[in-house]
Image (cartoon, rainbow, N blue to C red; front, side):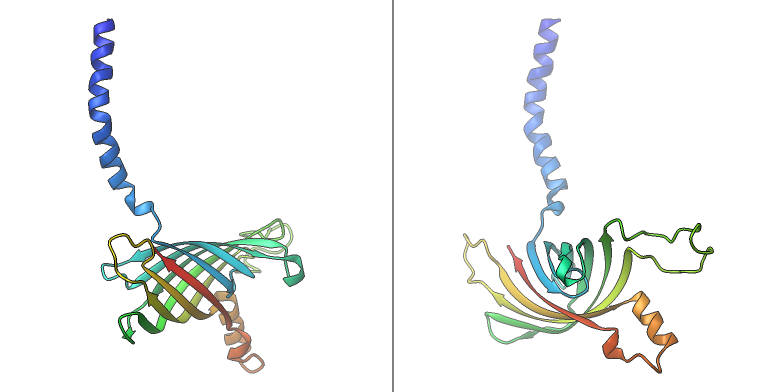
Length: 200
């Protein structure tokens, strides 16, 4: 019995490095490509999170952010956001700077707190009286970005640093605008934010 246990441990020790290598390759996609911080923009007074490159030529971004709104700015509450943006056009200014003039996007923003519910209580309001969620908002956005590339080297840890400005609106604002277009202007339903995206 001891010999059998010893053989099993020995075989497992041979297999473990191979298993770890394969397992690490499978989970490599979970490692972020960068970090992001943002001020305003419907996801919190300040927010920060991680970034993933999308598509083969890195034409898209997936950002996952945690935001916070302090009490003196309309809070206090926190948010979680998942943002997608696509960069179809780019203008290479020089080897150090690239401009992305128009980047459409979309994102979901979830407000965390006891004051926000995903659905309205039927005890308080008739079913379907409010058709939107208090806590979850779907947004559309458009942004522009200036990216500064780092000097290429085999030991570099920083690939690029990008500054961006974004305007967005959400589902509830759009419906409100359509229903009250005579009294609400487009400037009333769009909000701006700016941020910094660092890629490694």
